[in-house]
Amino acid sequence: MTASGNGHGHSNGSTSSDPAELRAEIRRTRAELGETVQLLAAKADVKARMRSSASQARDRFRARASTTAARMRDTNGGRSGGQAGLRPNPVPVATLIGVAASAVAVILLVMRRRRR
Image 1 (cartoon, rainbow, N blue to C red):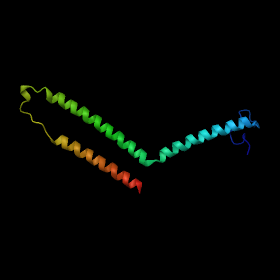
Image 2 (image 1 turned 90 degrees about the horizontal axis):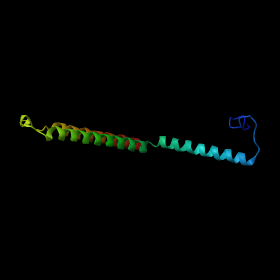
Image 3 (image 1 turned 180 degrees about the horizontal axis):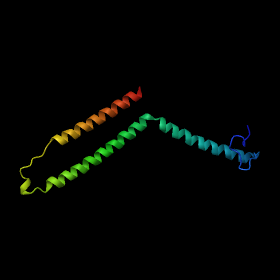
Image 4 (image 1 turned 180 degrees about the vertical axis):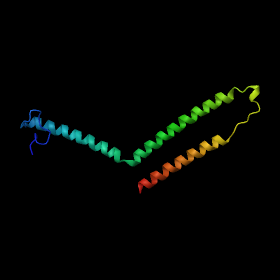
């Protein structure tokens, strides 16, 4: 098959027999193929994708936890006389810890099953 027949020829439809142009075309094709292979390999690397997903989830959780902690400090830090009867409720903290532990356990189980 000629270069013009496979869609990689020149725009005027003629093929080049100049070795320098052919080498340049081969280099371009190899570079494109290398990029494609790298993209496919990254997409097929489930372990790395799971690590990335877990890392992103962990970062989101930490950001939300620090925002919530700051909000709680702002709310409870300036207590007035009318709020003296309120006491802190430990249940939300225990719930957050339980949810975080469950999320980590699920991520580890999924990663372990994908390895097999």
